[in-house]
Length: 101
Image (cartoon, rainbow, N blue to C red; front, side, top):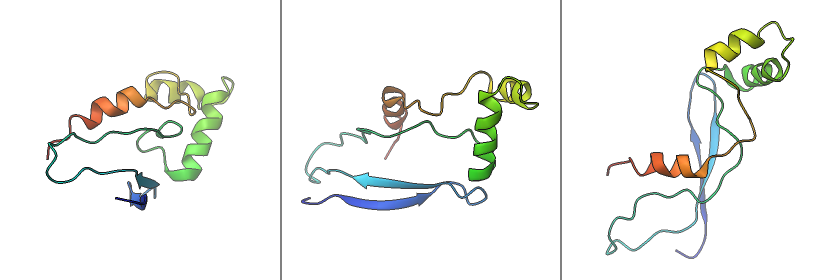
């Protein structure tokens, strides 16, 4: 392939979650389908319907402050704690293996 290729992906039109994806390598068409593999990334995905960037920052503030008036209801809505720094490469690759072409 020679060079990395980058593209942007808009996940949610309402909340405008933009992602930058870098294609590191690809195999020739004569190769057997190896599937898609993620080799790295940063931070956890924001929860669905958290309300865009502004809503996400409000969510983070409430989640890290047990005294925040929204803390308990957000914990219940989410189903537990949230670590915005978490990145679960193994889980991501398990989900990517489910992609059918």
